[in-house]
Length: 368
Ligand code: ATP
Image 1 (cartoon, rainbow, N blue to C red):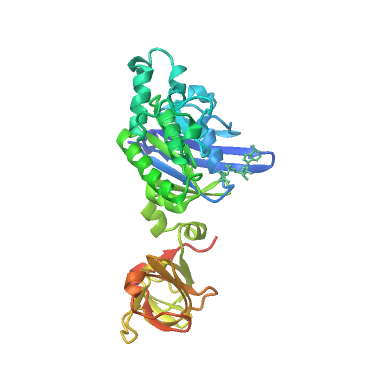
Image 2: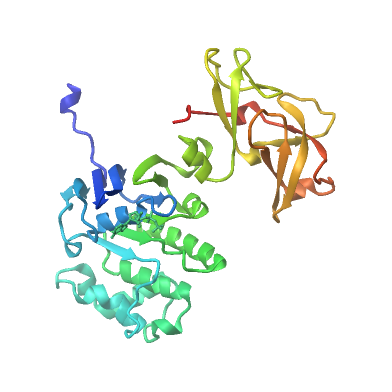
């Protein structure tokens, strides 16, 4: 069949060429994104990259200048928020302080038309059900001020889900919480989302949160999408220098060809797993945890000696900054498990033998 006439299946939520300007400033620059039904997609990027603007445009709280948003086959680009089918949770809980928990959760249900399933079941029962779902049964009569931040955010989640929306939008829902509560609630949210199967889009600037929760991560910068991929893909094969730097730590190694599968970086001759084009320079990326620590006399492939410049003990692991004569402007940073280092005295000036396994030299595209 002629490819032109083949109908491609449409994603559950399609964002096409979405652009939003504030005066001369371009907050969203021709964003394309397709989200599948039931997917948990995280918009990740530094402050000001446009992730909240994108979420708010999906919610109809911000109107784009051009582009289209199609949800479940319906063009919602110009619909008011009330006519779109989503629940939303904000960073600041946004509960009504004068209403008790039950009334907060029931808020969206009260304004629903009589034929909605939730309305038929009875609002009281639905509120009860939702509070059980978020782990706060029996708290209907409490007021927001009597709850912790994490509990308030659970109530906000119950309220957002009470109307059985087709789409759940989460705008930095964890960033106002302390570290322990953040980790606890993030796994509860992900568990709940998986159980309900509700298509979810969450904004965060926290890489670990994104890696832990997402089916797919959308990395943004300056109103543009830099890379879309599964957490492992984004972490293991960053598409450009920005993504590599933004997600975790890493070492960029610029090298010249030195044989069919070998490169030279400073004093080092390293084997890699790709065929090397002999006519250009190459760039590789090495994650600190992929660097191996060998016994000093163990002269195995891709191993070399390096001098410790800095040693940082960070609990479960340690970061070791090394002068490894790689010919780069930045020293090499390696991460070793603290258990593994136990009994090996490492301090500035120590000489170590380290190695970069060939499979962990990950090719990077040429710099933009
Ligand atoms: P943060 O995590 O800091 O909220 P973000 O990636 O969510 O960052 P947005 O809130 O989407 O960023 O903002 C993107 C850019 O658009 C920012 O530079 C912001 O200053 C600008 N911006 C957002 N809203 C407005 C507005 N109403 N008027 C003018 N500029 C705005």
